[in-house]
Length: 585
Image 1: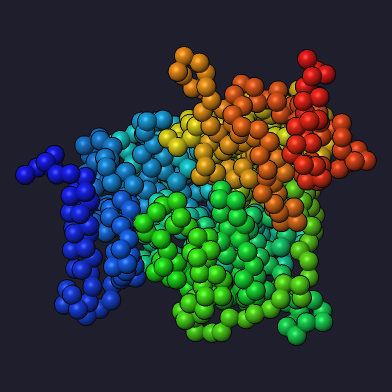
Image 2: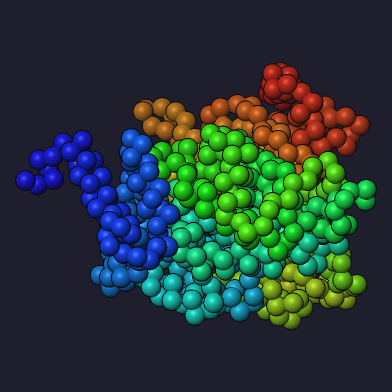
């Protein structure tokens, strides 16, 4: 009997039996083994799911059949043959940071990981050489302060992966059901107002993951961020685990030194920010606590439905008290409870402090935030930034979650020279209030989930608005291609969510749903929907009308965009918008 002779129900049953056999082989007592394997927690979670009547989703069956960390031979064989992966292997390859992105591009994308987003000039120069030889001649800075390489052909993934490892760059776990790049404050160690330098803790978390095999193959992907309390936010509230630096008030019983607050469950694509758990941590406790949270999630997260598999949904089912009680069981110390109101307020966030030239905490030193066109860097520009960093900076290139980079430790006497050389690279050291806050995911150019060509449309929006309006207040526009919300449209002043719109003759075209009034930190909030299904070619003019409504009705001439939007009901804004468009017609 062949597979073609089986019904879908029979196929699923056999898949479950096969997965169960593979699971049983790893269970002490069933297989005769005595030593618990690093995979044991995952094995037990799958068995528990099935025992409770749940049906493992396809990705869980694939992970049970073939551990994604043991797929090197398959990647190497496909490279030798010059073929791309098929079936479950497309998913499994992602655990090595390797994404087959057909049909949008018939090639691989490789995602790197670097704790706190800080690369050395050596890393950037070496990556540029690999990209020039084996990629598309450019990289993208991602919304996790990371780099990704695109247009890698079928014969070349091993060259890229081994070349990156030679440079000391890791890709393991950069995709699929794993903990993504660990982010931290982009100005760590140089920020005049930071409470904690996040670099050692992001680095500690990074290496903890790399050396604990059981922290791979989670129920779903996972994000962790450390915010040091400085002038630029690390967007920790959008992460599954966020560590937010605070200092107790002077009249509190705790010492007057910085701690981290533990936040859990952020996933703004599902309209939720991480919530404060009431737990206050010494910095050196954070990695252990994150490990405990991950173990509870691994054991109890949903392995049947990918749409409800993130940490948020386990917290929604259990509540925070039960979850934290379970996490406590995995810790050798007692979690410290402390009310948030007994901590000093967070220092103000500089919304566009990641762009332009600013003083550091070090005397006579400055950092320069370099504007990238929606995160894209050519090989020539990468070499140029590496050279600038070696000549004028500290030999580092700091990536940010806003898809730009920062050069630090610039002597005040060198600022003008660095500005000129940045411009010669075709980049910018200052930006309009539109371009500086422009964030766009990969879009349909290279992602099969995207409904629109986000990066192209984002640049068209910037060019149009800059030619029509002068804005004194910064405005963040986040352009994302699908509901996965890699560009986090719900936290933008203006958020655009890609969709397909009717183009006539049974054809569809790129379009966007429009959202207003999102924010983070002191402005934390989920954007509200203004309009659905605006064709992409109409978006620049439509947003111009939105901005003219804001400029014409803001208070005192200096009210921020998000404050203006939140002061009005959406129906009121629509009414003002209709009037503005009618007057312009």
